[in-house]
Amino acid sequence: MPKLLCIGEILVEMVAADVDQSWLEPATWHGPFPSGAPAILADQAALCGATVDLVGSVGADPFGEACLARLRRSGVGLEHVRVDDTGTTGVAFVRYSASGARSFVFHLPETASGRFRLDDPATALADVGLVHVMGSTAFSADAVAAIGRFVDDASARGVPVSFDPNLRPEMLRRPEHVAELRRILLGARVVLASEGELPALLGDASDAACAARLLGGAAQVVVVKRGAAGASLFEPGRPEAREPGVAVHEVDPTGAGDCFGGTFLALYLSGTDPTTALRYANLAAGLSVTQRGPMSGNRSLADLEAALRSPAPGSGRPSQSAGPSSGAL
Picture 1 (cartoon, rainbow, N blue to C red):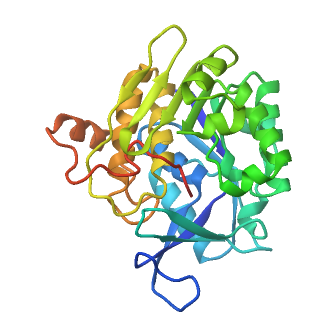
Picture 2 (picture 1 turned 180 degrees about the vertical axis):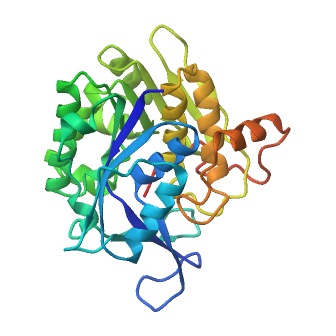
C-alpha cells in the first residue's frame, strides 16, 4: 500500500468533566489525552492498515512521551517527529456547553509542538502515495509557512495532496491564512471537508457547487462531512453518494472528523472503492464519539468490519459527530 505522510501538531488534550464548566473557576479536567488533528488521523489510518509517517514535534517531557507511546502502539512511523528539549508539548483544553458547542483554549504556537518542520523532503517523501495537511495546523504564520512548503515539496516531486480545511473561526479573520488554505485546497487531489467549509473558502453558494468546481480542477474525490446527517461523496461523472448518520450515545465528539479522515484515506490508498471507504469512515467517526478522549474511540479495520456485520452498530441518539461536523483537535 502506498505510504501516507501527515504533518502538523501533536499535543495533549484536557477535557472538562462537566457540561458548561466554567473557564474562570477551579474545576475538574480529564486527561491528558494524546491529541492533535494530524496525529489523530495518522493514528486511525495506521489502525486501519495504512503505512503512515507523521511529521511533527513534541517536548522532551511526559506529555510528549504519552503522545509518542500512543502513536507507536498504533503503528505510526515517528522517524520525522522531533523531540525538542527546548520547549514543552502543546496542550489544549476543551469544554462543552449544553447546546453541544465546544470551546477551546490552546497552548500551542509557543510550544515545542508548534515548531514542526520537514527537514529532509527528499527522504520523507520517498515512496509516499499521498501527503495530508489540515487547516487546523494554520495556527500561526510560521505554521502556515511550514504547511505551504510541505505541499510545495510534495507537488515538486509529483506526490498528490489530501486536504481537510478543518477551519477554526479565528482563521477566517486572517486573510493571509485563508489565501494559503484556498491555494492548498485548489491543488488537492482528495478533499475532506466539513459542511460549510468549502463555501467559506471558495465563496460558492453550496458544498455541492464547490465540489463541482474542485472536481473540474485537481480534485478526484471530494467528501463533505455532515454531522448527524452523515457524509457525502462527490466524484467526477457520478451522482452524489450519501451515508446516513450513525445512532450512538455521544460522549466526546472531538477528533471524530480526524477519525473519519484516517479511515477514508487508509482505505482509499489501499485501492478500495471510495463509496466503500465512505461507509467505513462514516461508521468509524460515529463510533469514535462514544469514548472520552480524541483518540480513545479510534478502531481497527477489523473492529469496523465487525460493526458493519452487526444489525445495529450503535444505539442511542444520532451523534452530532457521526460522520462528523468537525475534525477538531
